[in-house]
Image (cartoon, rainbow, N blue to C red; front, side, top):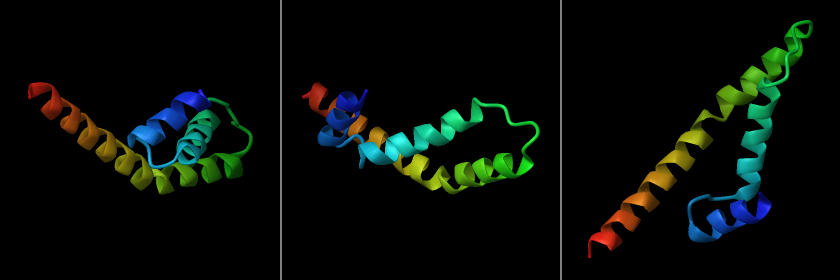
Length: 75
């Protein structure tokens, strides 16, 4: 997995493979159920909310790179 992330970073699809891993850790936190720990749930939710801009920036970067690939294929 890390090799693939590093490759995506080198190709310019990701700004940082570490950032992707941090975002994935947040996502993985949601897969664990903490019904008796509202503070932990709130902290995780706040992390996710604060990560939205990072996720949107990654999506925009990928869309831009894919547009360039499509343009090159049409040549």
